[in-house]
Length: 151
Image 1 (cartoon, rainbow, N blue to C red):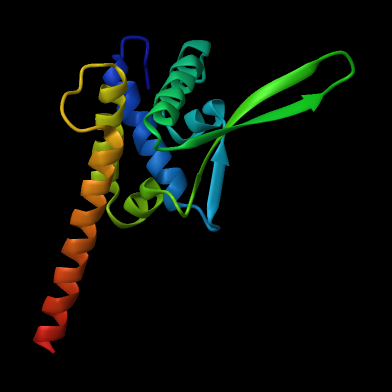
Image 2 (tube, rainbow, N blue to C red; image 1 turned 30 degrees about the vertical axis):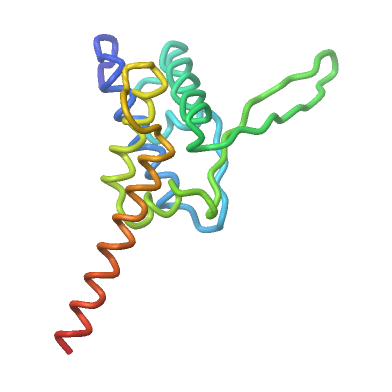
């Protein structure tokens, strides 16, 4: 895919879809990734520009409280390297939404990104996630009750 002319929003959509894919494919209760490895789940080229955009994307999600970050430090022969590793575990709201309603989770990730830009108005990204989570639980609860009534 030729991404030289892709806008920021299109790249953020691809990265949000990749994040949802990583969470959905997770076998355990925690998944960790680096910004560069997030690009492996997209069709975007692995250029420095896109790696930086992925890093900014992850930074915005950390700022919004959707994912968390931890620092990996390791020492080589001459220098100390510091790598940010991002993670999502089963206790986070995005985990549940990505597993049960991936389209809704993607919309909320993009909403959270717009809130960190200062363009968003109204409720915060975390509040939007809580509302969506409650709506999803309510919808799943209603569908289970309807199935019980049919039997």
